[in-house]
Amino acid sequence: MGNGQTISSAEISVAGKKAELLGNYRRHTSRKHHFILALLAALAAAVMFSLGQGSVPLDYQTIAMVLCNKLFGTDYACGDIAVTVIWELRLPRICMGIVVGAGLSLAGVTMQVILRNPLASPYTLGMASAAGFGAALSLVAGVGLGSGSEIWTITNAFVFSLLSSLMVVGLSRLRQVSSGTLILAGIAMMFLFSALTSLLQYIGSNEEIAAVVFWLMGNLSRASWPKTAITAVAVLGIMPVLLRYSWDFNALASGDETARSFGVNIGRVRFISLALSSLVVAASICFVGTIAFVGLVAPHIARMIIGGDHRFLLPAASLLGALLLLTADTAARTILSPVVLPVGILTSFLGVPLFVYLLVKRRRDYW
View 1 (cartoon, one colour):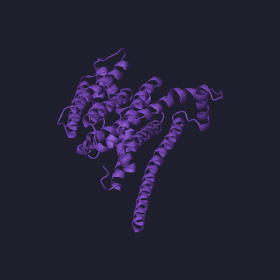
View 2 (cartoon, one colour; view 1 turned 90 degrees about the horizontal axis):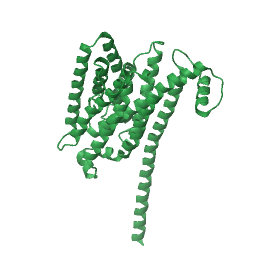
View 3 (tube, helix red, strand yellow; view 1 turned 180 degrees about the horizontal axis):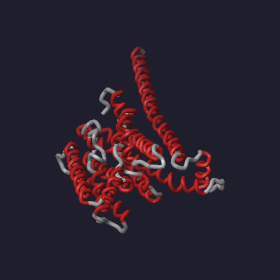
View 4 (cartoon, rainbow, N blue to C red; view 1 turned 60 degrees about the vertical axis):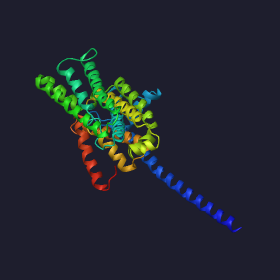
């Protein structure tokens, strides 16, 4: 009887501990879910605010009527100018900013965990510099794939960005190649393509140099519905695949040996993830130019707030990157309206102070 009571008490104790752990886990994940939902709400609010800002201010009632007419087939009287401004000019730009910001942040998170380096980003791996060289090659030398100057610039930026990443991805397939070696290879490619771009700027005319500099600063003014759709297909199509590797990323964050002990095929995961993130970056920056800082700062901010569980970090960083880029572009359109500043300048202005503030506030090592 005594033994039976002892066993029963032990079972009750174990069951109580399991229930307590399960409750703590649910509260822990609930906070992450709430943060992601808050980002979605903030992004929706930022979209509505951005639609009303610019050289032609619009009230929210007009915005709602135009969107209802276009999306649900209603027949509200809102004027042709409002329809053109919202549906043809501002909304494609806003959607492109959301998709590009999400794509760059998604790629940044993936590169950082795969290479286990907090400095990994589309810039440090040379992809942005390679895209800039491809664009400069078409703008200065008139050399490119496709027909037409704009098609040359887009395809060149896409192809050269992929070429730069191919070497890094190829190195990841070699044995005994560390993540540090991949970072150094990417930095070498960054300097190489930056030097080639500077050479083209040196031999180009004033107009050609101005065009190259404008492209390198990054700008969403070239956005259109077809371009936005292409970028969205690339980003939204690849995001679920990367989310499937969330558990593998969590294991890799603890080190290669730990991941290998959990049965993770490190070479395969690293190769596929780098290839997919490179495709996302190339599809994003080929249309809008090189936009700095988003792919680096948004993943770090999201990691500081919700931790390193990639099941939540990947979507949170993507939403945060979209919100950061949309906020920067809205500011770029309104600060000196009707003059529109390049959004790449504003991303650094907005991102750097916030990043430094969080680093100072969060004193412990979060990585």
